[in-house]
Length: 314
Image (tube, rainbow, N blue to C red; front, side):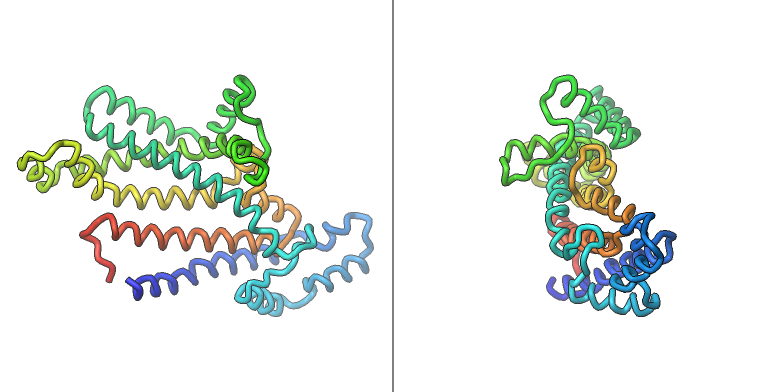
């Protein structure tokens, strides 16, 4: 197991560095000058040149890459052009918001997807099964921002249960903080739960037709024990894989939701930094997302092996 984890950690390095290198090149080759954008239209060419020198943007691309790579390896990501603060100090607060929303959304997706999928499989070809499958297809067909706008209209504007937008830190009150992330998490989790429902239903149907399930029933075991102890554990393995993909999407693809609800998360930070040509912040945000996704994928691989005894790590 330890050797497997070590090999997986080595495989993580290309997963992290390849997108970082691509982001570095695209930022430098894209049109736009951070120095000119910071100083504004009234700046003289000499002022722009002086600021470019201070930021190290007047050096050859190879030299910039060497200094950038050294900074990444030592976690000295530089200072933000806009905030005038070290990037390593800026990222934690924004990453915390994104992780909060993603974890709550993942919990909603797991609970709804697992319960609906098992119920649909156990009630196969009944109105319950057809209704749950229809809802899952509908959920997959509608984009997340549509769910977000619908939830805002119903729960924030019409019934005034949740705030329309904004974020409250947990230090200012757990209930108030939960109220600000509930609607974004529901908007993200509902669509992912539709995907998990279909996967759990399909996986449960396959497992319930296995010979060992028939043997367990023939031995007189209660149906609940057969389902929960023997069928659900094996059926959960593909479900966990889909859950890992959904978690990756929740961490890296929730930009629209953060913009709609004005959440100070990594997605919003990344979009704002790209607009400002704030190179260090863009690279730091991509690095944070890449590390979280790599760790998540490793955890999913290990959990898959624990759930399915037929899987051997070699």
